[in-house]
Structure formats: C-alpha cells, structure tokens
Length: 244
Image (cartoon, rainbow, N blue to C red; front, side, top):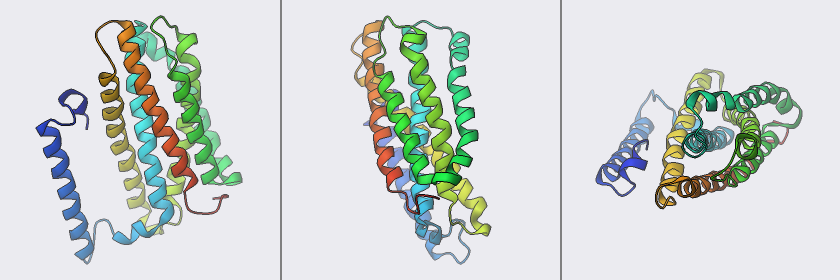
C-alpha cells in the first residue's frame, strides 16, 4: 500500500502483493475456524459494535494519515514552508486533537458513542471541504489554519468513539485481542489512505509548478471528503443504543 503511489495500482508488484495478501487472509480464516485454540476466535466478529468500530477505525486511519501526507506536501511544495515552520503550524491541529480526545470520554457517557462518532465524522467532512479550497498563492491562515483546527477536533473525537465502539460488549478475556485488532485496523487504514490520496493527487497533477500541484492536492482533499462522507454512514450504522 505504501509503495502504490510510486509503483502504480496496476503494476505487477502491486497486483501480486494484493493477491498474495488476499490468499493468506483466506488461509488464516480457514485455519482459525478449524483450530481448537484459535489466535483470533471467529466468534469475535459476531460482535456488531466491534466490527462497526473497526470499520470506522479504518476510515479514521485513512483520513488521518492521508490528510497529514497531503497537507504537509501542500505546505512545503506550494507554500514553501520549511518542515520546522510547518511543524509549528500544526500546533493548532495537535492541541485540538488532544483537547477533543480528553473531552470525548465524558461526552460519550452522556450521549453515546454512536452519536459522538457521527459528529466526529461530520467534522472530518467539514475539515476536508475547507481544505479543498487551498490555492497556489495561499497562506497559513487563509488556507490551512481553519482546516487544521477542524480536522484536529475530528481526529480526537472520532478516534476515541471508534475505540469505545470496537470494545463495547467484548468479553474481559478478549479485551486485549480486541484492542490489538482495533490498533491494526487503524494502521491498515493509514496505509490505504496514504496510497489512495497520494494516487489521486498524482493523477490530477498535470505538469510542474504550484498551480498544477495545487490542483492535485485539491483533488486529494476531495478524496478525503468522500472518505469522511462514507464514515458518516458507517457511524450512523453502528449497532447499539444511542447512549453507548
């Protein structure tokens, strides 16, 4: 997944790797279903909130890592920020991430993880939409600040809600495994998101120069928007009562 933007989706190495991954996953499922002491008991996936929470976490990973790659490239290649300056510029993102993550736990206790997850994904939609308007002659406050602010809030909110959903109703003895699956879902989503948005950016970049690069980055942010819209639907479909 990480190499897809460079090698291409139709490259033999990509197709062979994806086919091998699908085959190995199928074999793993077959072995686990027949084993007396499976590493990942199939019964876990009868837990609706766990499945829904992990699907949501895949999308959170896609948005978080995919967005981070594209916004960093835009800031450095178009706005010509140095890595250090852009790093300082993401403090607004990081602070909102930290603040929202700390507040989300108590919010979930009041209105439920599903409602919070829907709200968090809606923030991803808004943040992505704000970023689709980046320009070739832009500035930090004109093109980045508000998008970073909203996206940071979405990350903290949705990450916690997806984690809570994925661990809802899990047996005590399965809690560690369920947490590991949830972590895996995030990183799989991150690799997929990076590949997808980078591929979209490359496909819509026609020629060199800030204007051409910006067109590609705008398209990548629209891909984030589509992913976030799908996330709203997944969050709405999370099983369980609205109050967690």
